[in-house]
Amino acid sequence: MKLLISLLALSLIITACNIPPPSDGQYSGDNGLFEGNTEAQEASIHTNFSKHFMIGTAVSAKQILGGDRSTLDLIKKEFNAITPENIMKWELIHPKPNVYEFKAADALVNFAEQNDIFLVGHTLVWHHMTPDWIFKDDAGKYVSREVLLGRLEEHINAVVGRYKNRIDAWDVVNEALNDDGSLRESNWLKIIGEDYIEIAFEMAAKAAPNAKLYYNDYSLTEPKKRRGAVRLIGSLQAKGVKIDGIGFQGHYGLTWPSLNKLEDSIKAFEKLGIDIFISELDVSVLPRGGENQLGADISLNIEIEDKLNPYPRRLPPVIEAKLARRYHEIFAVLNKHRDIISRVSVWGLSDENSWLNDWPVKERTDYPLLFDRQMKKKSFVSSLHLAK
Ligand code: GLA
Image 1 (cartoon, rainbow, N blue to C red):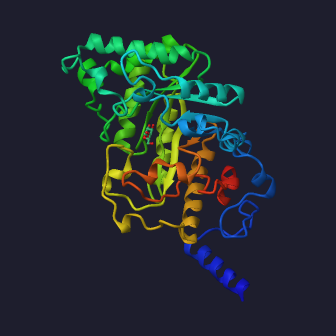
Image 2 (cartoon, rainbow, N blue to C red):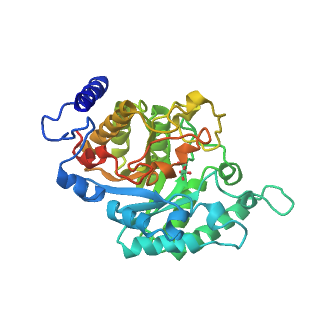
Image 3 (spheres, protein in one colour):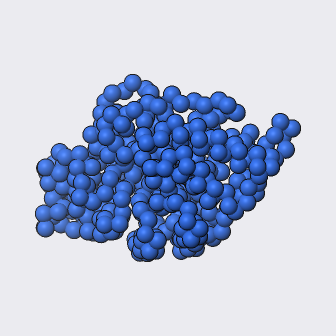
């Protein structure tokens, strides 16, 4: 009887989600979700992707300093690239004038070096998580272009210079564009002017000539923003500024962005001849908190309601199957372009750690990552490298 009920449930899930049956050996899971063969299930994620691109994750201060060996062991087994989730953001690494907090960053750099993991520094110039003091003088007035450039150069020399030849790549500028592709009216733009972006890249290149230098942003799959980013990078290249790559943050949902938009953007940036990668992938299964949640504007904070938090205890199998299918569809596009994609990094290790539990609505339960709350690898992960 039990078996009959399970079989019935399984066929319902398969029908509901229109998942292809395990016919060609690629989808061999017996639970209705995609699973790789036993060898792929036992291998680490980055081993499965060794012919594709690097597979990365974001690491928190708690993980790197918390003394929990098993989490760090899991990270080094499964991933061959890491990005500090928050550790190197200005307000944490350089909270006050002349005060630098390098403890967590040093530990992260040592960890990456000891385990031969590609390390991305994140991030030098951003409008969030950047303390107000850098833009103001003692009287609280905005500083001049020269003063701000001086502070930026000091910061870049101190942070990028400290880890010269030890950090492989830097997200130099994060989120400089509005959704319509124009330049964001940040304090950087208002005080320095449009050339703050090229100046930041030049300063970073001087402080670490061997590091790869990237521009990183969300919603790059949206045509207007994509065009803005292509314009921006093209203009840097025309001026001879060193820029090596574009990071699509990749904060996605079950139904957006469309796969066509993702592919169109990959092709658009391919023409620029730079590295293309997904820098912060996660797939939210929760309802959007309004139209604005398409991007990743961290200043959003929407009131919680039950309907916005539909799975507080567990993810129903039907939604789990949708998540599996969506991850497979996204990776089908990425795998197809693996000759030009250098890395895919997910934004956190397990669902428990995800920022999406608190954004854009606080205290929800989301399931966006590759490991569940028990640190178990989700069953669809072992066949992601086969998706096509
Ligand atoms: C943006 C930033 C990341 C992080 C996320 C939210 O994507 O680039 O550093 O703050 O928002 O976690």
